[in-house]
Image (cartoon, rainbow over all chains, first blue to last red; front, side):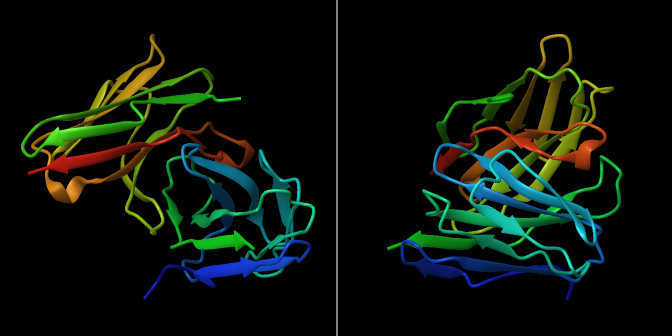
Length: 114
Length: 113
């Protein structure tokens, strides 16, 4: 059963803590993406990776970090430097480099800062 | 910088009616325009997409109309059903640079009986 899994579904963080969100895909996709979704603001790109061991900043990378050590995994760390981390985080993946290749999304992780 | 502007923010349509959502973009380098559908608590899913070399694409009850000169595109949902109630996002991307998607702010559609 192919797809993208994100864990946990809900995550609570105390101020000052770093937390890591997991994203795994078994679609054999080369590219992976992290988006943040806030009410009324659509989806905004945090980081993306087109190949293992390489990644680039998106539009709102400050306060976040990623790694891409394996093709199927692209974890996102929300650091204490992120001032307003409460949001819905979505991971996506896409096959190859063709622009018309569909970008598939995972089910998301809802992060709440206590 | 909002490169894709979407309207309306919310929309209420009667069952069987036509739902219309509009988007406008600024960057003429965009060459792929998908629409995503998202249900509460779920990730978005691709609904339909269009390339700029065609003016219209239809898939079942869903149609994209594209106006390259006006830099606008719209989603039409014919015979709207309560099951279509969801949030819809338009997006755009350009060749190269990771083929990143730039999203509109979303339209919350409610189809009433």
